[in-house]
Length: 512
Image 1 (tube, rainbow, N blue to C red):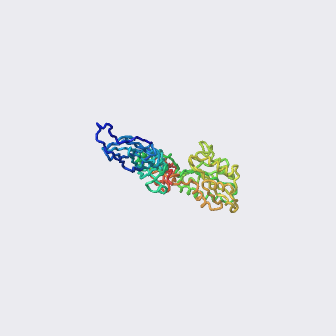
Image 2: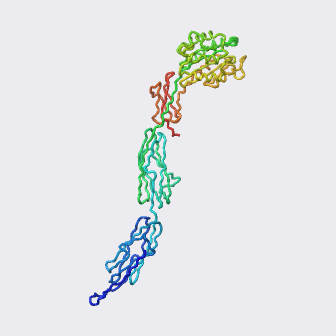
Image 3: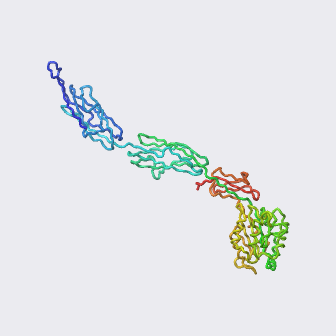
């Protein structure tokens, strides 16, 4: 902007009325060098230029700036008159619109001379910092877990220096400054650079929630302190319940081969003598059991009643087994078919020939005893599969057998093909030699027939603190302990046989 005006020392033209002539002097401009310093783009810096004269004549002056610069403004204006006293102050304001240096010369011109002022300054974008997101809400954190929000700190065109981050919040909030990546504070960000910090909330219990404030200090002149409001909430995981029947009742069906070979070898006599050993072992288990014997293909138990139980005396149980054997006659080469018929729902249901033998929720255990090969229509695969349909409420099938040694047989007895595979495919997996002493093998077989009770409940996930409940037949109990290291609930008092124990809890799905 070039401003030119004439300047002269004024004198009167009428010699009769004119005052004494003034003495002209020189114009004095200070300072000779004016530096605005560092100025942010869009902001203003003001300085003063003083105009004075050395004589006693007023001076008309004009001010120019070279090169012309619209970002410079002059007050009271670019031309005027300066009297000997007082001097004139020119207010010069610089409002840069882009970064870069100011390099200009201000010239004050009069008729008798001129004076200059060298102008300088440096414009730059102001530091600025944007925080996103703000505010921060971390909702629905799964209890026992932690969720993290990436907090972006972004500098503007002028960069920014972050001097402090201060977290003032409820328990559960943490701030990861990642000094391994960013180094320690302060952080100097270049233009448009973003630093990311992790803000997390850990819900250590059901219902955990929190609020707080993250304070960020920087050299952003417009917002040197920014407060980010924080909030978080949690939700409970889906409850888990695990139930187990304690010392589950067991229904034991002995499938006995009573064919001629068993008679001729005196094995039936040996078995008869060993019945007390079997009954004693079953009673020693402490389980609630039903006990019956079948040999005939129709599956009906022969005798005065279809089964005896753990409530009967040992003598009564032995006597009933002997009665069942006596009524079976010379049969038993189709024991798979006999067992399936004996446990058919029609047979064990009301009015059936084995009414009440198989109970809902009880383990179904089969003990096969033979010295021959089974000739049933149902092979061992169908036999095992069908048995699995005869149990309910999570009960299992157990199969043990006494037969010819696998795979070579024993004495005059061939290997018990079919029975051996059946025992290996289900629960007990127990096979014994029919050539061995029954007084020994019967107790061993009796030990594997009941379904074992695992007194410890190993939870799939650790339980959240304070969320475990244990019920026995629907009634709460406090007789248990929890090992957090192994996620195991163990009862300290054994419930009654057949009681249903239920462990319920909220899983901690995030703890390693």
